[in-house]
Length: 371
Image (tube, rainbow, N blue to C red; front, side, top):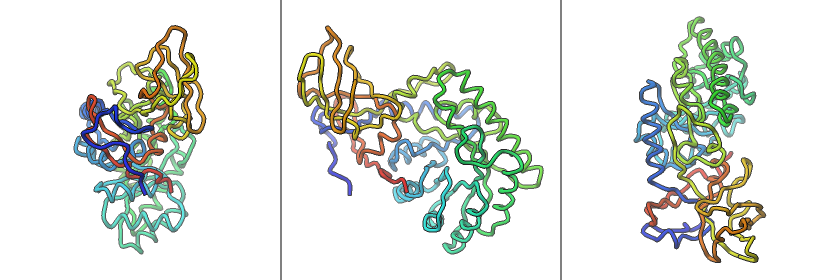
């Protein structure tokens, strides 16, 4: 059950309770338009990845801005977004286990649902689940194009699995999932371009092999915020899956972006100074439980010389450089999270503001939906 929201529409930003997850609506809306404008000339479809925001309201706004639907990573995320009015969802991940497959199939009765596979045994179970539910599901073969995570190898292994899917009565072979996640945070554009060139070759070669065997391979889908222009211009990818562009974070902001559109930082952790024990040390109420630290420490906004230095469970210790102005007791600060996706999963609400006023409070519909 969600906790009460930390703010109400119309409230001053200064009165928002903390820690809270803030969304700058002006920056967020610019990001939606920037992505739509960047993708339009490429002639490909946009299917943003909702694992970044887990919010049905944001998914609906992405679709209103031209997206064909969204991606998710987990069955429960798909359930939350379909319940929130999203009618086209790709689970861009493997789903294993009869209980989960039955849930996926049940969703297929009320929405267009796609799912990825990389093993023939799962295909058989998925076909049976779809039959029992009276549904027909889109199935994508996940191909390992360089991330070395899930996925069959390019070429013949992918072809064999596509043939199994095509022979299943309740499944439709929809195409290939070809996401190179390891490329997204390579810092230079040259590194990212090179990694995607290899992914494009593997995906294109696999698609040609499948089509040469008489199977239609309608969609090659993949890409992320760090590389989407390369997949989009490749002539191989038909659909792009960037997610973090709506928010951005400290890790993505460390990338070099020559040739890419500029996405604005729109997501922040709002924190209150709870202690000022020395001139060099200030403590805020946002610690390990308030944001993800897998991509490094958060960054303090608007306070030169003030650095987030050390977290514990409920405390964030800030280091104040000699001569720098220190925040006062009770002062509220914005922090840029190191990694937006897992940070969002810690919150029930997005406090959406414009200027110094709260405009809306949106539920994080799929918060905790990792099953």
